[in-house]
Length: 202
Image (cartoon, rainbow, N blue to C red; front, side):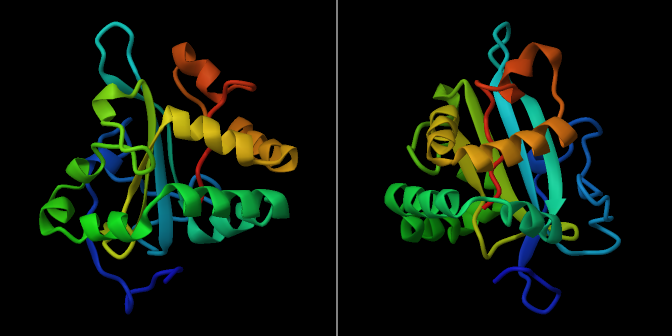
């Protein structure tokens, strides 16, 4: 189905959970090429990573970004053959796509995507029990696609993903992280080798 266009797109208004937390508004530009995602609609992904604040227990964003489909393709082409195969095997073995997609078809979930993202898409762990988690979804212009459900991954899944990636791919992702992503100083270990969590471009 990707990339999307105006003819094959069905969507809902972007949920606030996927807003840019710095200005509490939708992302407007691709992190990499700076293309305007609203004025010049294209398929794009938003990923946000959170960690619970030790003082108040509330999840706070560690990193967040929007990236257009063209830039996703350029980055994923750098993945090693081994990493691509391992990622395919991991998700095929660990997620029930049919059940996941079926749950997303519930109108209540589409009206409230935050409800859909209340548990890990892989492990089923409630978000309240996770110290770290990442969410991602696909968008077109001012809307989130309803064709592909959003995903939420706990920190344990992120660790497992690191273990299936080759050193070549990890180096590419580390370069991406170092060049484009920053976060609060108190969460710097989230983005630093060897404890860093991977960006998830699927």
